[in-house]
Image 1 (tube, rainbow, N blue to C red):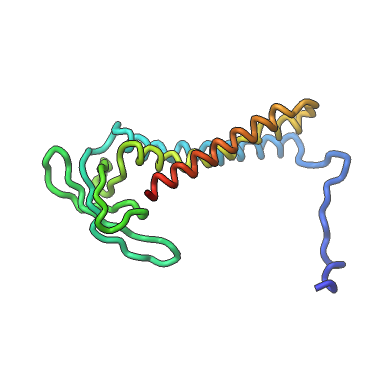
Image 2: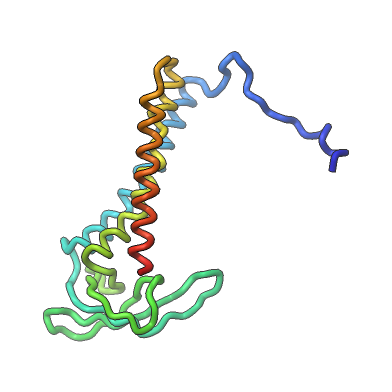
Length: 178
């Protein structure tokens, strides 16, 4: 392996502060913001369902879960509306087990049911929590590029925001799989 080491070019930052120019920095900040905010935008429909703002309330009974391989599952269930309407065959959450019975809400499209209540809300907040945690150190990077001398508060805030995002993501995953 050592015979290849001379062929590798090692990249180290130089002391002159070279890096992306002003346009590159703006592009990087916008991409970072998009990656951090997009999960929250995409989670809105599931949050609306879990909080009861949309969908039909009822009970979901998971009938079967097929192993698709590589840790993926396809679960099917029967949704019984609280209003006494007909039972609907739906896709259930892939983290379900056959035989599970839970409070759920049927999507307006009528094709899947998601857990309702606290469990559903925490599960729906998992992905936005990851995005939120990813935004933690963006202020520090902006301050660094701006040449601000006192960045200690930005580091402390970044640690706290990232830790809060990670904790909420773990809580949401535990709620989804319990």
